[in-house]
Length: 264
Image (cartoon, rainbow, N blue to C red; front, side, top):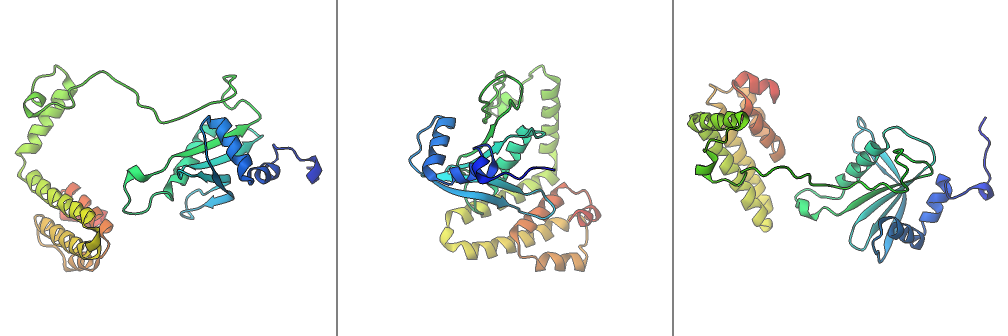
């Protein structure tokens, strides 16, 4: 049977004591500055923040959760027991933190920095290092002609895979069906662009976008044949732009009306 500890017996490694110490903003700030080796002016600390977005998916409980004056967010955890897949655990924690830091309609450039810090009294990766840092990296590869213009992109590259792509691109360009899809896609992009620029008219634009998506979707489906009344009514009753866009994507990828109905 596990012996109960008294408060006086606890050390910083105990979750309760660690959380109590880190709730002090100066303590938390000092730890973050030493671990990350960056200056921080101030932090706001929350303890035991739970993030659960859907009952079917795994939620997380962040022991110490803080943010600084630049809106960078930090999760700090104390680990004294070895747990499986510690690296993937930190990855999942970070993804869950990101989920609530970007509101609908905001640009990805507004996503703040996030840090997940696990303090362990053991070597989690067996490399005999006192600190492991994982961050986003760009792995370079050999130069390829990605920025080639139209004429350059059609040159011979002596690469079977590139030739395969060139052949498929030529096939796409000859397809009248793909030309129609591209025109519809261009119109959708124009609608989204207009909506982003004129924020003051967002409500009217959303209504117009919904109407345009419905008309465009039904027009495209008629290429497959007569659209059943129940499907047409279902489309007309739908008011969510994301749902209509999802149906549009399904329509583009479908070969028949039956395939579209099964996937929608």
